[in-house]
Length: 204
Image (cartoon, rainbow, N blue to C red; front, side, top):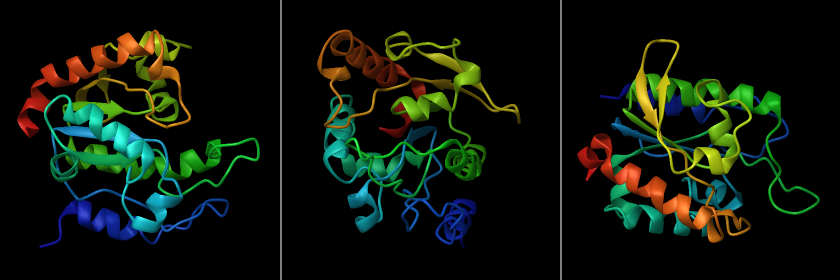
């Protein structure tokens, strides 16, 4: 029997709301889990392979999670992997990938919100500034990354779902934030918080 998430992903794969984005839309496995991770947007390799975090940034990300008890295969099978946007936004002429614009983010928001309400996780891990920004109404105003990473924050959705937020920096090879202070200290601190969370223990 097809699950609610399977039906959601069937609809997602048909989505063509954003003419400036390159698909097909990418999603993880249909896993109802106490842990939900929300990334930013897929790159070209993710579009080609049809799965999130399958290239360089993914290698770094899964090393982080392996350090607290779960390898890539286990993570993909046991954690709900979501994202702010599901199609590749294209390249930025100045280098790197283009950041999705406000309309593109709004167009894609119903997908991750539907995953959230379906899976009803107890721990949400937003990865990168764009993902963290989706929870701005639950976080201190205009807070910098170094004020958010390494701490745990309460989350409550409009429907009454309660969970904890533990933000992580983006593991992009172009990022230096987690390779120097304060990221060198705050990243392990965030990972320790995740490792200690009961929802994380429940997926091990």
